[in-house]
Image (tube, rainbow, N blue to C red):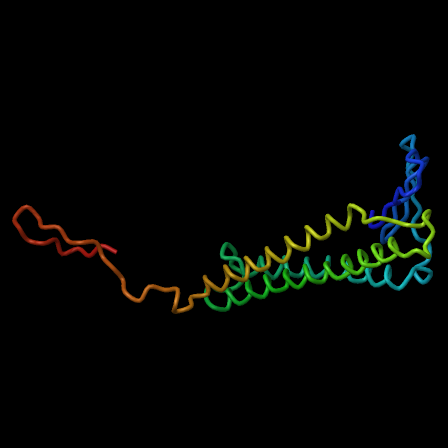
Length: 190
């Protein structure tokens, strides 16, 4: 559902709605019957759809890489010894997640630009005008979540990496209390 039929005619009652996506196009009848057809030839597709397919698949594969890198650098795993190296691995995983969000955002915005441009083009017939589909909105939300999540992972890894400005320079102990005979207890509390 990257593109959905626009209802622009004077007649509001329509017999069918057309959905177009990256992998198939579907026609939904007013009776609820839906018929989908997978694109048969990759080379027959427009360059925009081919590029959007490649970038979307790349974003999914990059998200899997980010998942494994982030799990490797997580504090609850023992794949890497705790310390600055583990924090750098987690920071790398967060950066890959943010990059994945950007990679997913590119085809969404590109495709939305094409849909809006063709919608306002007077040379395109009314029957061939499309509106933004639900998949674009879901993709924008997913991209925002990927970038925000990657940023949070990066911030958490940076704070937990043991940077000197986040560690306390002096260890404080609890105040000592006098015992019954008036002397102070020799235990140090941390």
